[in-house]
Image 1 (cartoon, rainbow, N blue to C red):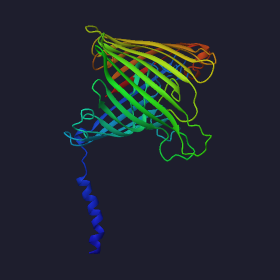
Image 2: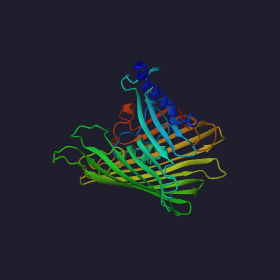
Image 3: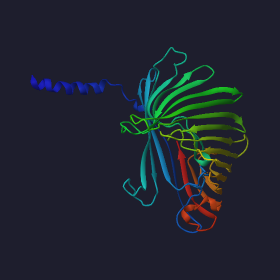
Image 4: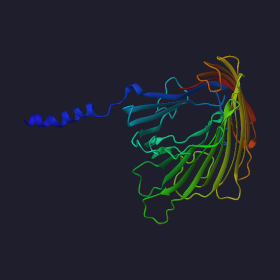
Length: 416
């Protein structure tokens, strides 16, 4: 009898595995992104890139100007019944390597890195019968949140990413509303740590004109600490994002955006995602325009973009950044196309330095279908860049004291 009693907890545990909500294996979804490239320069050596790390210039025009091998894979696992309440787990793992050796691992002098970018659970179908909450979703974990980027420069002008919890898709009739809480620094912090916290209210799907929609997000940022030290200043700030999206323009769309920040929310990039706590003075604003065109009846498509921003961190002068670029593409057929990308950036630091850099790339592409967004794409490219003294050392000094340089290579890019 004693032996049977000892086995009872084990039997109950095994039985619970068969009664738990099952994973719907047939609904598992995998999607991702990969880019890889190889090449050299007119001076010798391997492929080099231009424009990165030149403050206050914050973007790069990416065609023929990427040096890392990068992959990101997201797996979404559904639970429950498809006709009732449901839940999904999302995990995004990203991989970056330098391609220095045929074998690279995470101990190889940081030549190969693995990053966890998303790990969260969302669920819905719990509020049937409520007009406002019928289609709403709740979520908890680390995730991408309301990300917006300019593809040709790989610049995320808004992204409230991080670890938190929230509710999405609240139907207000004329608009939809999402509410979220985020925190930085993880859990179980030291008592004296000042950690960043933020509260977000996002509205979207607001019809403001024919084929035009408005969306926005207001974020309240603050520092928080469990310390009893009254001299510790936790700080605060705000950020506001507004965007108008117009469809039906030359077969494409246009996104015009405004980003305003103050104190903890001031800066040109990585905000509000990487906001911390503590004292921070300043204010900033940016405008971005992102236009995709694909006129009907033509073989031409492409993207035009422009950005301008000012940031002041408590000094007498602003940091200023301006950028403009275009990437038109001509498809000879579904399989063959030529893309040309021209980008120009200039800045002015609060100390008076005025960096400038211009870049042009010509790429011959192989794709499986026509159009600017067709992927996979395999490319052969040549890139030429020109910069001034204030832009500092470009391309790891490969071009010495010259203020221009040429690179070339091959790239493959795909998303699914």
